[in-house]
Image (tube, rainbow, N blue to C red; front, top):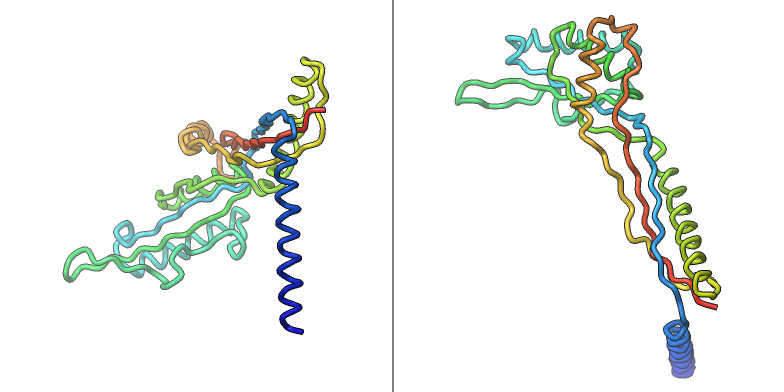
Length: 235
């Protein structure tokens, strides 16, 4: 009984391989047109990540550093930052990181990552922290919360562009573009420009305003790109 089952499975496997080989040959012998469809879109970043660094070298001693940390947290809360949701400590292993400079000299430091929802909010944070003597604030990265949604839309747009291109080419030679017989995503990526120079320039123009009335600022757009290779049968 066991031997017969093994023979049946082997026969089924051989039959499957045979049929697959026939399908592969049929596909290989099918006349086709091959085109690449592309699509891109500029999107406005709505996730701006700031790096905030506190160091004992800037405030004299550990007690002063702890006091400055409390002041930073209070300042962020005052301008509407949700500390629990938007702020995180980069080094979760300890309260303050210790750096040994020389044999008997240790300096304490702490780094935060703050997620802001707009360039305006990021500017408010930088201006508010600058006002209390915290100047080590930089833009780590920018992103968009809807990136995955836009990726899916761009893939659809790219393959539609491929279909349109194939139909135009087929029409030019009096043939018809049939169904897709091969699809592969060649590339999906996004270009993010260096946001800090543009943001600093905008921030400099807003320095005369107070924190509450910072004008609308903007980062340069993120460019999303999609490229799909498609083969259509010729009919």
